[in-house]
Length: 147
View (cartoon, rainbow, N blue to C red):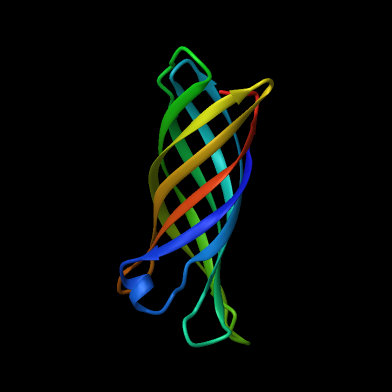
């Protein structure tokens, strides 16, 4: 699957000045009936209010996906998983830090021939010092193989 979207900061991350940003994700996986798994890679970029700086988050997650089968062309799914995210500020000389992360969310896919059109939202929490960096990524795109 491949899709762009938005990344909405919440909690302390938003309070620290992060603005709604953009993202792109790519994922691949397997399924057997209702249960499946996928590896998801993402690139997220959020601006910082009042500056020209930004924070970029590059990550990989391993998700369990539960897809209740429905009759018809629309299929909902739930997902949750763990992984690692590397965050870096655009300030010259800053270095990136890789931290543990977890996510949980839901989406649906609409069958369109050999592909599926998906819309997905989730809660992403990156374990950063002091508090967590929390985001709500919302994305849409195409999924080869349909459901």
